[in-house]
Length: 190
Image 1 (cartoon, rainbow, N blue to C red):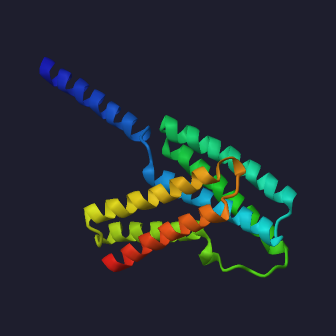
Image 2: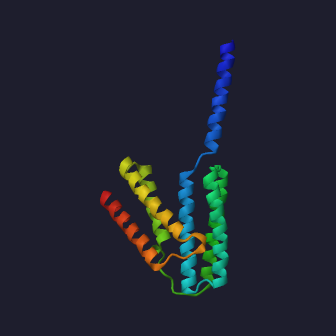
Image 3: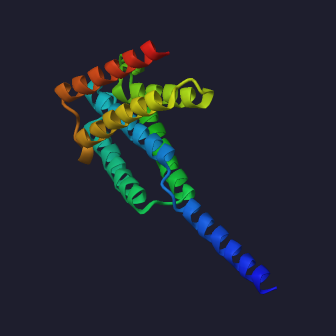
């Protein structure tokens, strides 16, 4: 009888420990998604200011909002937040992206092809990698290598634009060439 009670207590404790760890884990897919969204939003703000679709006041307002979200993102990543926290952060990024799109849509301008933005390219490559993993097309070693390279590019781009700073033309060109190289390798592999 004592063994059964002890076994039940140990199993309950183990289950509670497992569930506690599961809810406090790092969510790498959410981190990547948030980083990708921040890159795209940063590109949109920079392009909007450059083309005149956004006024300097609007771009500053959006950059301030993005900076606050980045601060929350860093805290969330460091403290290993819950899935609900990540969903809230993702929602804030979605709202900011839609606000920028609305502001840009109100202004008549010559539209730059969106697929030339580094942020959009990062998102597209991430989708290809995710699809490859889901469909079992990528071998584990190559898939991890490609993911690591894309994570490095995304991370470098985020560092370049920290604090609302715009990436220089040289920095954008470097990111673009690294994305070209990764895309070329992915195309060769597939």
